[in-house]
Image 1 (tube, helix red, strand yellow):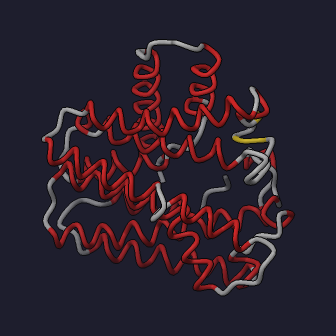
Image 2 (tube, rainbow, N blue to C red):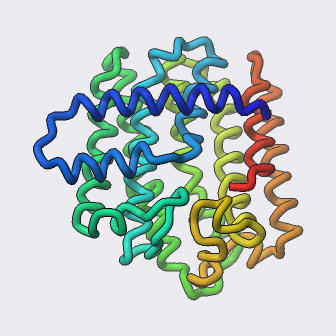
Amino acid sequence: MDLTQLAQYQERVNDFLGQQLSQQTINEPTLHQAMEYGLLLGGKRVRPFLVYATGEMLGVDLAQLDHAAGSIEAIHAYSLIHDDLPAMDDDALRRGQPTCHVQFDEATAILAGDALQTFAFELLCQAQLEPQQQIKLVKILANASGYHGMCGGQALDIAATNKQISLTQLQQIHRHKTGALLQAAVEMACVIAKVSPQELKLLQQFSAAIGLAFQVQDDILDVIGDTKTLGKPQGSDIEANKSTYPALLGLAQAQDKAQQLIEQALHALDALPYNSELLKDFSRFIISRNQ
């Protein structure tokens, strides 16, 4: 895909988040630095991209999407800080840099993650939207990031480590752990745009497919990628004895699975009465990326 639009959205959400963080009263400088480190130090900004790209396709002004885009990235950043902790994945490298607990310390990293989680909901409460829209956005983000979404998926993932699980179980893990937030990004844009139930259903089908495809490609890259390009240790899933799509299906079939999911996403977009070329390009990019 033309990465110009992706770069523009990345710059927009980075500027917005940097501005919002700079407006926070600094009570404890080290914690504030750790929040900035976890939130602003690189990243593909896939979730904000989906908020912006979906919202723009639906005719929403970008300024109305900033708080939703920023909030979902703050949740994602908190999750990565906590995922990297010794009690979770115990990783020392993230985005080519020391992980937050390595750069600071474990206690500061835990607090930085906690603070970014609450910061996300603070952003949603500040959005200039109708109260009912704000409530819906809070509910979507809470469901996608909590027990029924990302946190639940992480717990399932931990429970499945060192065990043989089925493809159905693996898909359940990743629909929660990775897919839930990607779906939430699209659904939040739909709430702001006030789409019809039928359009919402199609966009939910699209986001569910790309959410799973994104994780399948991550699993593939853990096998065929390299540490420098990935920005995190290559082969870490294998070393941690985690179930992955290549491990269950073989590399070629995992790649086929990713392609099938993208075809499902494209099919859902084809049924929409909008110019969805950017989202289609992004769907293809998901399984062609190398990091």
